[in-house]
Image (cartoon, rainbow, N blue to C red; front, side):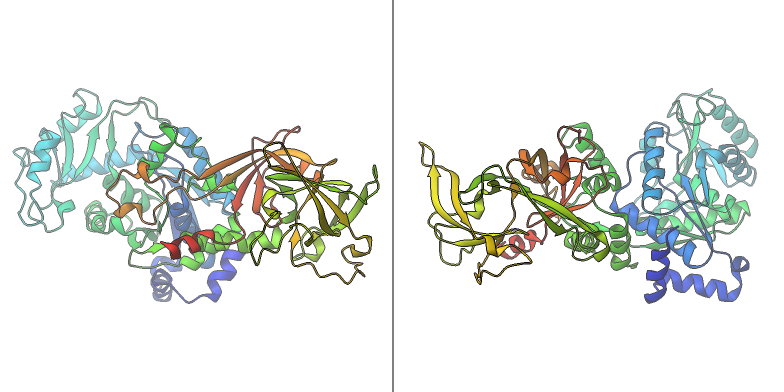
Length: 562
């Protein structure tokens, strides 16, 4: 587990869950133990909402000297896969946490079956032959009580026999279920004889074909907590109605009394976080995969260049609340910029090149200029930049007929080349169509950065790369996945809301030579352009960079215009 989470949480005011835990400790509950768990279903990749839960559960265990389990809620063999198991464990560890134990709900299938038998023997569960539609109709409505199943009063002996036959595979899938026998008039719809077990002939990623009946969430979750002696079972608000059933099962089984507590899940604007919808984006090829850098998955954010420290900081800033709200994506991006500003190596890249020829610079000469790797980190050292007669600058750093307050290059205008010299445009070269193809400039030898005695005062500083030494690379400019702020409230299909400019690929960017030898998870600030990280597609002959985040929040201006 990380130390910075502990340092952050100790300085912050207590949230309501911490208040509960400290009260429990003071009263001596569970001998002062704190044991939490993070229980994802392995049916997809984790997203930023899960990151908040990971930071909460592992952070609480760390703060109070307790333990946190990682438990895979693998009770639905149809949707689960070892690929997701591996990705989840990798994400938890990348965020900076190591589980005290790694368990699976499937570890407890035998015990959960025994629990179900115990409920039957106590007259608290029965086998129902009704169809799913019939069971749904029996539930009633929030304003109308449900009706008893015709199978509700079967004898204990008959229920035990039928449940054994369900386990032995003697009934067709969907033909029978095991239901809890509670109260069909309960104001809590979940308590109206909920289904505990269903028949499903499907190969399980861990237990193979041993089982053809599987417990539902409410039959597995609280009981697994109890088996592991979890003291504080923390989940999101949508599970609040399930708490009554959670307690009912534990009370009637007379097992360790784990307790459930709920907090508001993370809702992020300009983002979709439904696993079903994310899976749809992957399967229908709207994105390249679960780790596409536009995805709100932890693996996608990692590939995009987000840091674990930034995500942990974001989770801390968002805090733990009891009421749902929507968090602005710009807060996450701020946390990313804040961290990258401290650690990213400054570099130069030109994405839309325009040739500059310095006519008074000696032909064939190369000068190696020393520049800081990161002015925020004096210990990051320096690097050498090659400077020569021919350079690349950005097309939009030059205008032949500029408007007022255009402070970049134009005919006769001075401009400083970052870490190099001041230049002035003398001649504009165009092709047959009138497009500017080249600038002929003069440089001022006495204006070298750090040694400037020229007295010249250019109003702009431009980034550049040496044309002779530049490395060709691909740069992928990623942006927000959705065009609208709150897709949940939009009546259109969410796929109609996808941002068509969420990915712009620059196939032939020019990079300074230090960027030729990079590896994924390195972090760079391309001066004036944003923060970037090498992608896994990088090859020795052609590096590929993903834009992590822009230098400033461009969407704030868009929101104001809207």
